[in-house]
Structure formats: structure tokens, C-alpha cells
Length: 437
Image 1: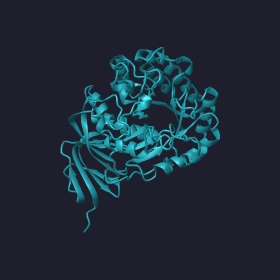
Image 2: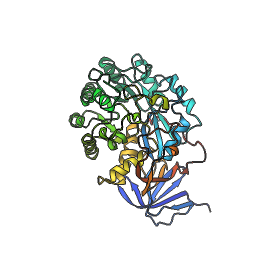
Image 3: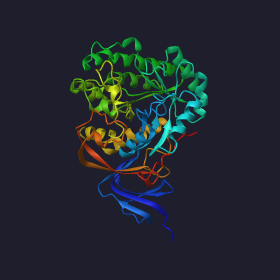
Image 4: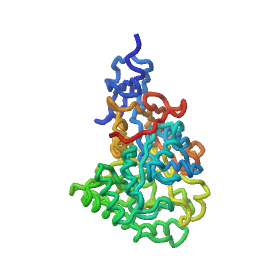
């Protein structure tokens, strides 16, 4: 007789939607088919008992810039998904820029999927882009399976992906609302931004003030209310905008927000002179702002923590904060970075799984991802929550080992990762995903 299950994974710290408890997870044909008591007899081809090593759902990172095709020297599908797998991320959703061409039409999406085919260690979905002039392409992109549409309210940093002004955003939101789609927004008001007054971090921070985020978020929420389009604010750095978001949501407006590991763990006060690996837009703000972001996360105003992995070549990070490329690479490190900070603030692994797995999965409409429960993909992570390590850039699998976390001691080590019931490491098994219809 054949065993009824392909795999059983047991842990005394299994992180389930209802919380953490001892459990055994049974897998067949790449799907979770049962979650039973820890010691339940479950005949399987392979039975792994992790003991006190935690079992998490595979993380979902819905904000990753892979950059291939066109800028593969910055990052590519093989290196980005390798870094994701090493960090316990089993699904990423790729941003429509900074690839060439950007994903602003069905042909560009087809080119991106062709570049990714057979090269991915984890599953990959795709966002489309909303830019001036591509209104007619939004529905075809939606029909082709993108998970939603990304736009900017301020310059994106690359000329081929321009920002939407208010009339352009209203038109895009009206169109996206007509087919029940989602618009995700980089929200900074261009009228409140300025050129940095010098190469240092204080000058860069002053050039992108908090009120630029606040004003842009208010505009997005107002247009969401007007058009009925669901909207999501990406990489929120301004904690002062949290009451505004809560107010609009209290009125029934469909607006949500995410933040990133760097905003929750790094502070403006600690950025060393010339350390442009800390540069991102919006910027890392002061320690008091960071703690208020944690409060917004605990209160549910922020629903996701995602990387905004935005790499470039080391050469583009040279110079001062006024000229260097703005982007932080943390795809491989997000889980231990957040767990190290979360546990010191009284949060548990179930909170981390909600912020980094089920929350992003729900945002992107990935109905098979983000939870350990029957019917979901068997994307699982064995995570040693008490082990520590020091970040060595040389161990990172992203294309260029540039990171603001170099030399930091972090808590939590990813030990084993399963993608649809098979351990990652035996070749590129990742699938290219389409939005669930």
C-alpha cells in the first residue's frame, strides 16, 4: 500500500491562522490536505519532526523589483528568487519597473514572463503599471492576469515610467474600478519635494518631508472614495499619516497600506555619513516615527510588511545622498530583521506571519498562499526563532551584496523551505502566477 501523504511536517511551534500550537501538517500533490495534532499517526513518504523549530507559512513579498529584462545587471529572476528562497519567501510579486520595457501593456508582460520562465526558485506574480497614456492597456493587462496596477504620484526615478497627475489618476482609478481591480500607489506629493541641499543624509531627509506623503495619501483616498477603486499605499514611512488612513477607512473607503523592514528597524539618527545603502524613497525617518509605525502595525492600520527590494549596481550607489540611486535590498533578510524587532516589542510569530504572509497574499489575491491550512499550497518554512547570526553580505544571494544590515546581529534562522511540498534547492521549480479569477 502506498502512503496516503507525500510529506508530513511536525512542529511544536506551528504557526496557524488561529495562532501558534503543536501540529502536524500533511501534504499531498503539493497542497496541504490536513492539519492534525502534533503526534497524530499520519503515514507518509517523508515525515519530518522539527521539534521546537517553528513552522511558518511561506512568506509572500508583494513588493519586489526584479528589473529583468532590460536592467538585469541590477538584479534578475534567478538571483532575486534565490535570495527570496534563502529568506523563507516562497512567492514574490514583481513590480512593473525598473525593467525594460516596463510592464505597462500585454506585450511587455509577455516579455517579462518569457524572461522569468524556467529561472525562478519561488513562485512569481506580476503587477502591471498605470502611467500617462496607457489607460486602454489596463483592462487587457487585468485580463492577462496581473494582480493590480502600480502608479507614482511623483517622479519614479526612471523616465520610462512617468507619474500620474490627479486627472490621470482619476481616469486610471475609474477604469480599474470598472473591472474590480486594485491600484497600488507610491504616494509623495511632488509639489512638496525638493532637491537635497547637499550630499548628506539630513539634507536628503529634509528634501522629502512627511507632509509630502500625507498630502498624497489624502489625495489617493479622496479619489478612491470618488471612483470606488480599491487603493493601497506602498512603503509607508510617515507615521503621521496613520490617523488619516484610519479616518478614511472609517468612512468606508477601500484604502490600505504597507510598510517595510527598513522603516520599522532603521532610523535617520543612525545613518552613517556617506552610507548610501540606507537611501530609499520615501526616506528612513526618526526613531520616534519608527515606533509609531509599530503602533500602526499593531493596530491593523498597516496590514503588510514587504521588502520593496530595489537593487541596482554598486556604481549607482556611489556619491552622496543627493545623487545615489534610492533603493534598499532586503529580500533575503526581511524575516529575521522583522522577527528580531518584533519579539523585542512583545509580538509573536503569528503576528509576523500575518504581516509577511497572509496579509500580502490577500492584498495580491493569492488565494492559495500565505496560510498553513487545508487547501493551500504547501509552502512552508522551518524557522529557528532563537538562533542568532551576524549579517555577512557575502552570503546574500541577490546579484549585488549591498545592504544596510551588514554586520548586524539578527535573531531567527531559516533552516528549510518547502515550495508546494518539495524542498527548495533542486533547481528552479517556481511557477509564474496569474491573478485568481
